[in-house]
Image (tube, rainbow, N blue to C red):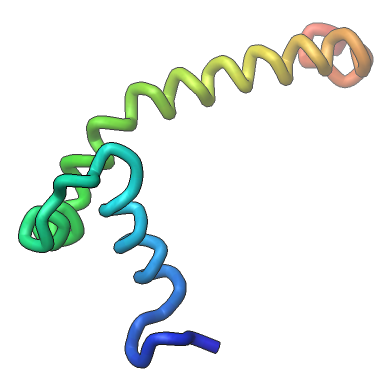
Length: 76
């Protein structure tokens, strides 16, 4: 159940994130602009997310090779 009429939990989370860490001085107009144009923030984070995914894949592949060597493509 939502506690604020007309505001769902996902939208509330987005609003909270807009005023999150490092946003103490953000005005309502700035927050609204960020919410209306999220691609700018999204694009800024893509390189980090891509690198995080690459590192995760390397770790998981190493884990698989160590613990489940029979299932790795190299064992076929």
